[in-house]
Image (cartoon, rainbow, N blue to C red; front, side, top):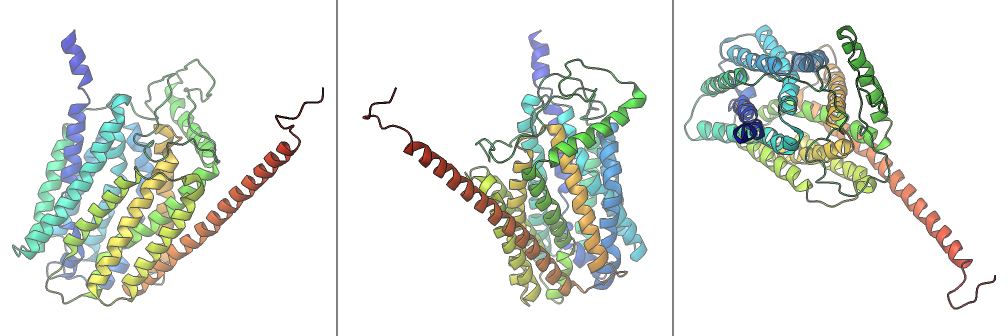
Length: 485
């Protein structure tokens, strides 16, 4: 009996280790920081205009088209098949990178890379379906930190191989192909979950835990907004119904979609959650756009540079962002009052870093602007995740995360169509970063006005409360005075 209990208590270790190994090798891609240099070099001989205006936009369009179907399919098929699909898509991408030629082939590659990013949701959601709630915080930390470590290690390795060993970019892609192939093999050994968050959820009358690690930022009760997502929902959709019903299989999908709509309506009815989600969507759209085209800008700023330090810059940026995100947990701030002011101030910093990248002719200044931009974004997105998830169950957090990501993709697609695509303005890369800087400046302006309104309202409420307290004290008898009976 004791042996059985030990096995049960350690049942979370095997899937966590396998998933982390998949995450490590899928992100151990040393060719990533030098993708633009490789594509524009003698191996592929693509022009900057072809990459910027014809090839890279396909990723945005395919990601948008695939995100919602994959999000639904991921839960319906119990996560593992989608993780395997991601592994296959990785392999296809790097086979095309190594042996494909021409604009059309690279556009097909971008489609499959859109599949890779759309299926990331399975990696982050899988672990919650195979471990018990008491292990959520531990395994979540492992699964989220391992890809960051792998990406940083891959960037450092790439820089060392290029700068010291003189390895060609082609062989960096060979190493990446080997790594993602190992990741695919690990995905085959993942246990198949017996439940999922929505379509195959196990009915329970216990309160659902909120996403792990969300208490580290805000330990004070949220006074300016009411909690959402704490109710316990049964299959009937009634939070107060203690009886668990088993709907017919044909009605499960309809019930899930109706429940999603009800959950989203209640979640976004909170102004606090709505405005943080708004910042999340707009900033993530701009962030993805910058990351998608920053290597093109670097190549534009230093086209004849013999030594390229993209790998070192990516490693430092990722490490700095991870440190900033980690430090948030130790910062004690009234985010309800000052959170949106912080969003405004740091959005100004992001806008300034993008303007620096646009106006400078020095590649090192351009690198510095990117380091500031990525670090600040990772800091702010960590705060935003905490503020959104602090009062949500795991299920509602996953739903809000999916919708926010989809809205960000819609915004990014609009930017791509207007600014980048040759069917739109088709702006050159130098002008694009001026647009992106102006975009973040507009975000800063919106949230600066919002923060001023919040602080002014809080000040007025405090004055009213003080005046009421003062007036009550004037009519209250002093202790030494006899009371009139």
